Each structure stands twice: as structure tokens, then as C-alpha cells.
Image (cartoon, rainbow, N blue to C red; front, side, top):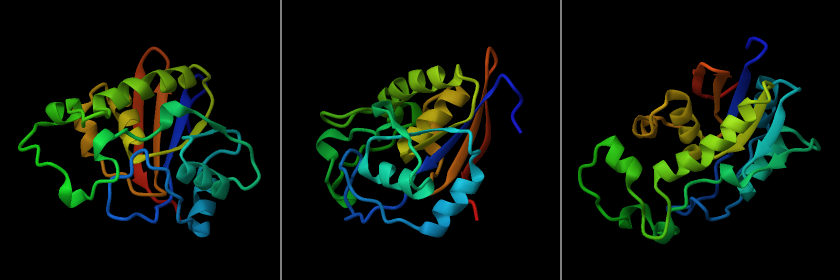
Length: 191
């Protein structure tokens, strides 16, 4: 249990989408909901948590499934990475970038899109502002957004790309004022 004066973040990746094998970062696809998983996630998050979702349809639908009838806010800072010209491109048709270390991969920006470093720069101020509330916060967002939150907690961007974030999984981070953050768990699928 977090101590008073800390902020416990409960980061939930949205439900799976009816994908078409193409990059869908900013494409607004609907979620394929799992009621049992949504109920398990609701039990894993304190009732007192402030609820915020990405404006993406799949995130709003997931939040509604987890907390039926309960209000939640949306924040555009929680959107998935904008893949620019790569949006809607089949994974098999993406260009081969060759060997890149994690720092170079995090800095790479698809044409007309955002790099992972850009996503981290967008997400970090949102998390920092929410951490000042010193109360539990539940965020329903995207794999890239959760990786950016992990980068914020760890203080490095590139290595955060190595985390697998499963749909309908829970990642918990505790923000401690003046100290930093602790990653409590990553990618747990509550039962």
C-alpha cells in the first residue's frame, strides 16, 4: 500500500482492437471488450482513484467497461505515438531501419510523426502534474504511453522500449515527491 504523500499510478492498456495487421497508433479503432477482464481491472484499482483515459475510442470504451456509468476525464497527452506516414501501413511493409540501439530507436521519427522521445516529452509533464495530487490515479491508455510512463519513472527513454505491454494489463508506478518513482509491477493481467 502506498504511503501518504505518494501518488500511485494504475496504468491500464486498452482492450485489444479488431486490428487489420496495420499500424494503428492514431487510427481510432474500436476495442474488443472482455467483461471478465474489465471487472478484474476494476477490482485492482482503488475506488478513490481519479480516472483518466486517452481520447482514443478504444481507451474510452475500455474505461467505460471497467467503470460502467462512472465518470472519467480524457487527456490528449495520453494518446498513442503518432506514426505519421506509417499509420495504416502493414507491419510487413514498414521500412527496415537496420540495426539501431535503443537510444537511436527512441529518437527515430517516422515521416510526419513522433519519435518515442517525443511521446515521452508529451507524457512526462502530464504525469508530473498528476503526481502533485498525491492521490491514486488510473490511466487507460496505450502501450506507447505506458512505456513513456516507465521511461519517466526510470529516468531513461530508450530502455523503456523493451517492455511488453499486453492489452488489458496493469502497470503500477508510485511517484514519491522529491525522490522519483518506483515501478511496482508491469504488464499484470488481473484475474
